[in-house]
Image (cartoon, rainbow, N blue to C red; front, side, top):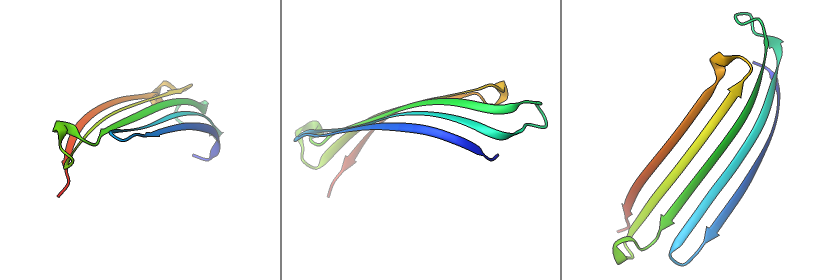
Length: 98
């Protein structure tokens, strides 16, 4: 499982009166040191990811309610197909502040 990884992440945050937006863009490349004994190859992965969260601080025109929406996408491409992975998540939520 040992290896070398190079990665970069770009983050953007907007803090507005009503809305807050936070986003991350991630890219990575990882090369492993040893040959996989099952697949007979030395593993190499390329990964991309994106995450965005939007918070509405006055949902329902109320200062007590916060709304939140988020999107996460992640894709890992490996030279060994067994390790390929892809994920997409969408979530919506509301919070009440006492």
